[in-house]
Image 1: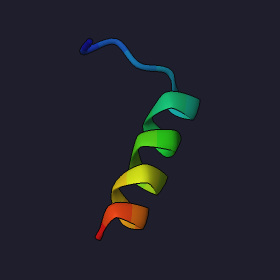
Image 2: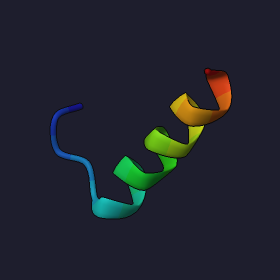
Image 3: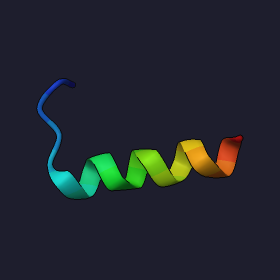
Length: 20
């Protein structure tokens, strides 16, 4: 779970931003 493509990181960042 440490190896994530840039798209995955962006998706997670967007998800976290939506959560906040």
